[in-house]
Image 1 (cartoon, rainbow, N blue to C red):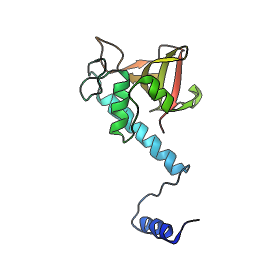
Image 2: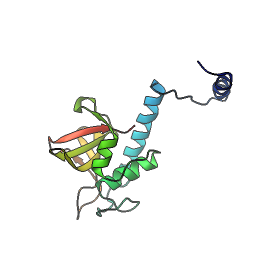
Image 3: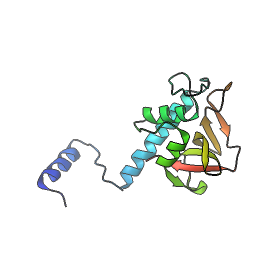
Length: 149
């Protein structure tokens, strides 16, 4: 139940055409999906940017630096490392993955690489020294998926 003040605020927002996002609603899910799509577009726009260990952009990136930068531009704050990003996401199965989800490469319980799922079994990522931001097929079965909240 909304208080009188809350009701007025909601009605005022409705009158001016603003969107009201209540936790757990379809609109909230759409907003998250929209931000993930924006992050994917940002990552793709960095195609060809050189890899540099520890770099977070805007012109050079390591793997988690690219995901951090891309989601930051989409209005979402992520932690710095691939492992920290994995710990922060909502873990999902491969069958539930969507464009804009994060793909985490792991050895046992150790996450060592991250990219942004682009659809069709591909990711945007910044792979290693001597390489650059690019679109690649997911090359390993040892991946986990995470949805940024």
